Length: 317
Ligand code: ATP
Image 1: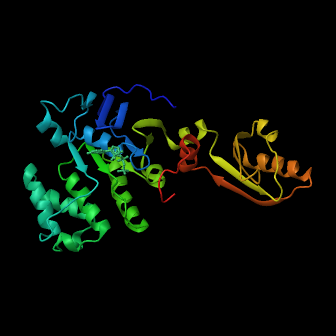
Image 2: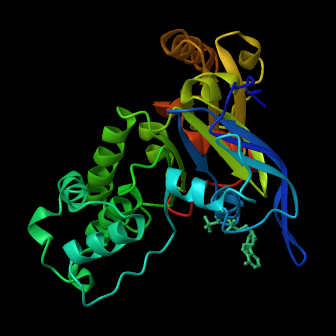
Image 3: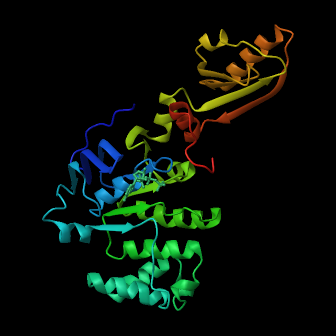
C-alpha cells in the first residue's frame, strides 16, 4: 500500500477509528489525515464502510474507539464551533415538498443567521435561478442534488462532506455537479466525497482512497495508484489457440501478466506500449498461433480494484 506522508495541521485527522454494528465491523482501525484544500474521494463498493466513516467525521455517528479531530478539535465540547465550519450533504436529502427552491435556501440560511445575499450567490452557483419559485417536489434528480449542495455551502464551509452526490444522476447532471465542485477548488475548500464512480474520483479529486471491508486498501493520486500496480497502460490480446506467454512476462516492459479463459485471453500492464506490442507480435509469429484481437487501453481504477480484491468497484462497472 502507498504510505501517506505526515500532514501538518490536517483539517481531518482520524486515528485508529473503529465502528461495529452488531456482528458487522463497518470501519476497522482506520487512520486518515486530510490537508486543507485537498479534494479526497472515498471510493469503494457497497458496504465498504464509506458512509460510516464519513458520518463519524461529520459527528453523526460516534466511533467505538479511536479519535477524530476536525481542525484540531474533537466533536465533544466543540459541536457548535465545528458545525459552523463544515457543510454536509447526506446520501439522501429530503426537502419540504411544498416550499420553493428560494424558500428552502432562505430557511436553511435562517438557521445560521445568513443574509439573503448569500442565498442569491448560491442560487447562481448551483444554477437554479430559473427554478427559484419551483416547489422542491418538482425538481429533477440533478436539480435536487444541486440544491442539496447549495444548502451545504450556505455557511461558506471550510470543509465539505458529500456522500454519493451523483448516484443515480445521468451523465450530464453529473457533469453539472462536477463543475460546481471544481469552482470550489479555487476557494481552498477541503472536500471529502464518497462515490462508486471511478471517473468522478479521477476527475475531481487530488487523492483517491480505495476502501474495502472497512479498511483502506490503497490511496494516492491516480498516477501513483496505477504506477504502483504496474503502469497505466494495458494490453489485452486474444489468440486463436491457447498460448503460453509467461516467458514474455519476464521482460521489463511487462509489469503484470494474467491469462484467462484457458490461455486464450492474456492481459499485460505495460510500461511501453509500442515495445510491448512488438514483442507480443514477434512472439506469436514464432508459433503456429495467430492473434484474434489486440486491444491497448489505459488501465482504470476498476482494473486495479479487481486485481486487489477480485471484484468490480461498482455493479455498473
Ligand atoms: P454504500 O456504497 O452501499 O453506501 P458504504 O461503503 O457507504 O456502502 P456503509 O454504509 O458504511 O458502506 O456500510 C458498511 C457496513 O456496515 C455494511 O455492511 C452495512 O450493512 C453496515 N451498516 C452500516 N450502517 C449500519 C447500521 N446502522 N446498522 C447495521 N449495519 C450497518
